[in-house]
Image (cartoon, rainbow, N blue to C red; front, side, top):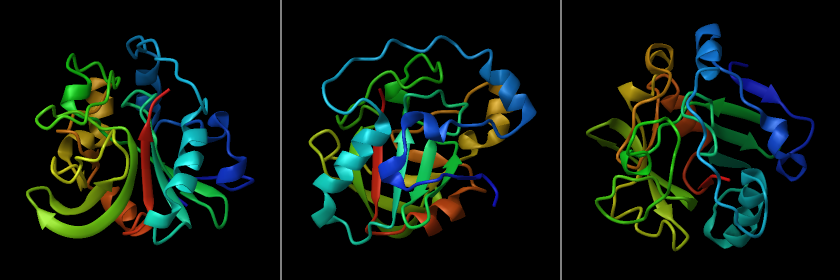
Length: 213
């Protein structure tokens, strides 16, 4: 299956190394070698990988979820040229990975690296934390899906209109031409060709988790 990487176990057996990402094309692979230096991570107590944190988040917010068969994970530790959004199927231990843009306010210099999260209205930044996927609607970006923030770090997601949508600046061609994706206003923006798969696989009532190490 396109962009599907088989994993020998489900989410409980996945480590950070188990979902190493590949570029979509040879051109994107060459681009990765020219990526600007990654900013130094902010060390935090607790689980040490985004996968570990996603596992903990799913347990914490179990009562807010309608479905626990799949989880969406945005690993913003990675550069925007990488396929850093993963939909993990917990029933068969497989994952699909996609490009995803981050917010302008999280990367003011447009380096391709998410520098920081923000939950402040008007910041145009991405917010980290747990979201429950909500209903589908048609807006200025076409078919989109609302998100409800479950943590203090993203509890203004609805008020800020942080959603899942497609965007021209999240297309693979942006990586080939510019070495990075464009930036959103804080939303999870995907290529138009990937969006139908995202919407189908990550339906209402499932968890989306965003973080960086």
